[in-house]
Image (cartoon, rainbow, N blue to C red; front, top):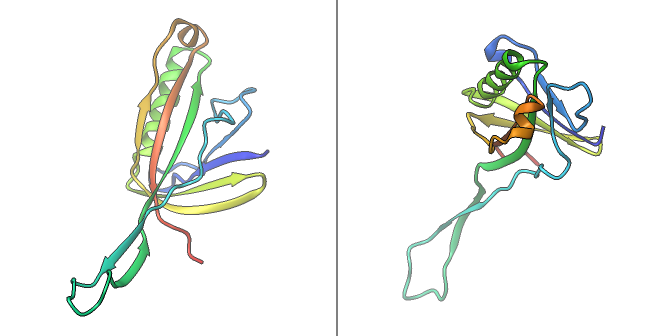
Length: 146
């Protein structure tokens, strides 16, 4: 499998939630065009301005917490199963602390994560007939050590 995200759910008393890119027989899956690698900003600390030194003097530079975003489809065999799967994904994303492992073409990276945000996409008749829902998930992640 070329694309996979794994969320630990130890704090919830459940096994890991493993989501791949194949929708066949899956309650959760990632479309291959709805996945990004985490993005990180740099935080620089600068010395106070000085009349004796031209420009700005950087005294520190660190990588800030980043954001991992993905699109996840959820399905259920019936309305109750779909609702249960949606609530399970919400609980997973909203955990206080957990880890997120991203695998792109067989190369996994694990990030320390904290409670994220989940937004359910538009509800349309095709998705409701198919007992499916679409979620945009955004999770704060810590940078990897070098």
